[in-house]
Length: 365
Image (cartoon, rainbow, N blue to C red; front, side, top):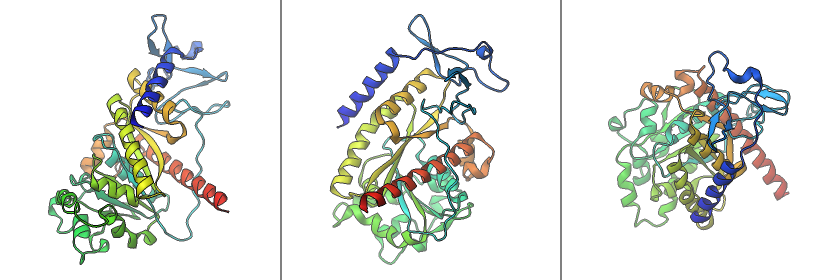
């Protein structure tokens, strides 16, 4: 399966290079507007066969400026950085009651692709929309805990104790965060020992699911930050999840690992948890100034289609700044483009879940 997905992605990349659409330039678009980069836009073909960024492109006779964080209003419609028409995601309806929670594993076996940042920022954005959110740090490095202002080595009890000690419950280890309506189940290096200790346990793939079961009625969303591997801990997260959200850095080596991840998700869905589905792939660390980034994103969209979120997360220094401060980007810099992108992602995610729920009701009834 991995070879087929990789081959399909390579074919899509070759087609994209050999069939670039003709782009009409308006005379006014030769120079960027104040504060805008001339590289934040679609590509213009050169006679040499290479490509260079064009400041603006005409879509349906209406001038549209393309940006990773926003798209200019146009009467002919909006186009996002994925090259697809950008739908308008409505604000979700307020909830009359909380629970049961949808469990989502934020997973990618490659490190440094934005899993922890996405877990924190998406969770905070969902909490702003009135959802009760639980973040589960399931990585022995404890990056999620650090990113929310906790020092893992100073904690007396973590998710490891909940997994391995019958007398400790998840409620004993929950910590409130700086975001109203968002709690944390922390982790530290002790969790690395759980993977070895669970090897000989009966039903070792479902230990995390049993731990989280009492908390599902109390929350609307549970986000699990997985470690960068496809070991037993990650399988535990997938086995108890309803969906998987895959942050994907717009870079070639990050794309290569997605095939192996998809194979693992397929095995878990077939053998352990039939309810497990793909919530979507999220393009992160996007920099529209580079041709490579744009080509990778185009290849991902060509290979996975509607599974790719319309929202794209820009590369910005404000994310590591927020991590150092121990706050989500929505608190650290509420007016930043990064905060706006994750708020947009929260609306898109809720819209997808709502549509999937309606489709499930129709098929069941």
